[in-house]
Image (cartoon, rainbow, N blue to C red):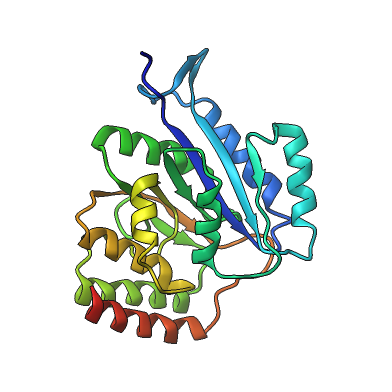
Length: 255
């Protein structure tokens, strides 16, 4: 009996990403269609290996025509490779992942942003790290050698770094970057930890990784460079800092 090969479902929450989504999809296909270093769980083709994957776009009622662009991409790449699973309005990041998870056919889930702050060129590194280590979660980190941030001013860099130092001090999660959102999960692991998460927005990613660490799941890191969005406006607001501090306190006393 032939062993079932791994499949990767890439869940991408979107809101007003009309200017980014086509380039994002192109880059995913570019970097996953031919991977020279993959040795297992892939089909060998000339010049490399082909990974089985799908992209699930969870759009929260974007008024800018994002869904129209996704439908055009479906015609180009196929509706079995690009899945549009839209919602009527913005309902929160955590619920977007849960919504996408319901439609995912892969046994591994990749969560990333569509605004190109998470470059698809890192996807092969995530996959090879998981294959080499058997990790339950592979998370991107900006805070080890080879990682970094581009496009942020000094205040944003200090705020992000300070948030991580605080979390490291009080929560000791065993990873260097808690607030990043570029991750690969074993599907069963994601289903387990997301069911117990209560946070929203900026704090949600931190709660996910802290609960995974507390539950004993194996977490590995891959260095990435985060690049601030090129097109569109950032969705991060000053109120997120207050929410972060509240979330930090919540996790300190409940995990």
